[in-house]
Length: 136
Length: 140
Image 1 (tube, one colour):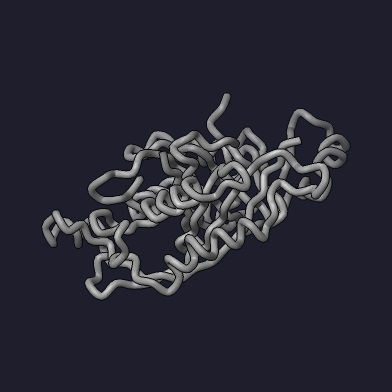
Image 2 (cartoon, one colour):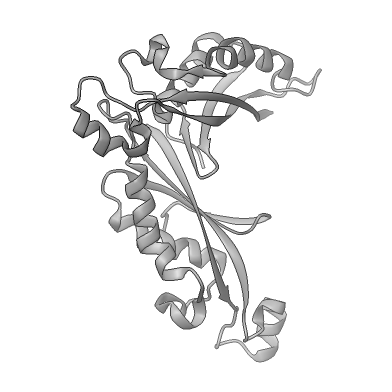
């Protein structure tokens, strides 16, 4: 079993707001992130897949295929978007880094055939990241 | 108390991805630019993770001097500024970073006795990396 990690970057804007909270609660819980005009981040995504090394090619997975899937399923959808307004799963769910990692897992997992998805890591800033392993 | 220690190293090597027993067309299609007959190189960044009880006398899982010495003699001297394809371990195996990662793990597993080897992580570029834990599942 060998694990392979591929990185990518995308930029998006978001804000945190729960319509079931009062304005005061939203302000208290989400602070500056509650600004309805939104703010942005340069996100770094790390996708880790696992599998056995193919004895013929020496590959766990074709890196180009993995890169293409990441581009098609994640970057093309999320890059340079306002997550709350343009990405259907965030019309309801708050686009925190936690929910973003779960969303990216759900976008990638059904598309990966050659290797098994192990982890999605999303850095919101270099100092803050979330790991999701597909666990309920 | 058990601790995990990770140390980073760097080495530079060249390689060409080509399976000798497969047709040229298959190799070009499978490996793309990496099949260039003249080869190409990378700065590999290696992370070695070992574990063990923290020695109450030294406060260490293992002495970094021992780990550094072993890695320098057995891994860096073998791979740094070398062409991987001409090494015996890659005579019949394509020197992908997956296979190199397994080779590095095996060298440590066979010879390093000062702490338990947990994992080897090898970065081929800033954008991709490989991890091997002797076939074990990685812990979160």
